[in-house]
Image 1 (cartoon, rainbow, N blue to C red):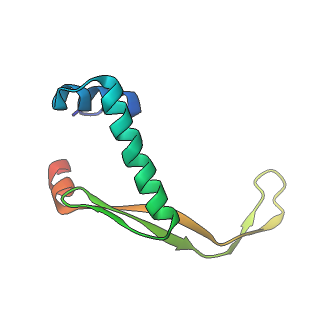
Image 2: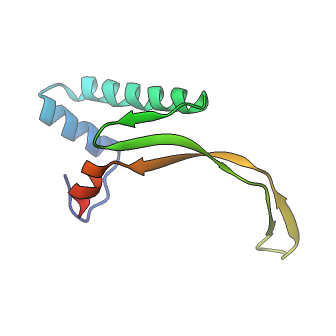
Length: 96
């Protein structure tokens, strides 16, 4: 779509509207519905696979020790679930 340029949600909505020949409002609703569906699936611990694009999934980050950058004091960082994305072959090929 854009080479070497940062793209935001509005840019994606514009591109989808032009490519699909639909209104920007309809494209915005479609993009928003997609994002909501991905979030809901990940919240339940599921995976979202878009064949040729990639897979969204939930990873686990272990608890660990860290340092407060202002004081240098040791702090405990809790374990957390983090969203992750693994690019599919077609996306990798498109980038290279």
